[in-house]
Length: 138
Image 1 (spheres, rainbow, N blue to C red):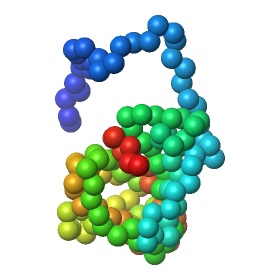
Image 2: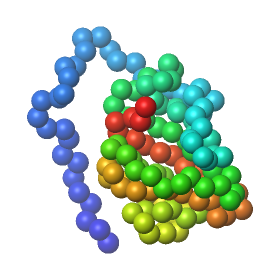
Image 3: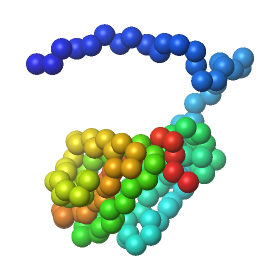
């Protein structure tokens, strides 16, 4: 069993000062997001928390729901942003740094900057993938 670590909290000076007024949260649903199509892929992304979404205009991160129907492929590529893919539903194969890796519901895939990655839905239901990107992609 893994040892549980004590949360230490944030240390040092914040990158920007705390505002005087209370900061309000943005509570949104997928329906509030901005749809995006990736070149050469029949899956659909929805930018939920992202600079382009006026209902949740994040500056330092992006949260995208990516819906990948059966047999659909997003060809491998890489970019300078760090990402985490969370497989919320379904199963498939991800190409990770040139290797084929089976992925399924409940898996977290951390992608350092410039790590090659792609996804293929090899299952029988639409894959639902939550993608967190920092900083957000354009």
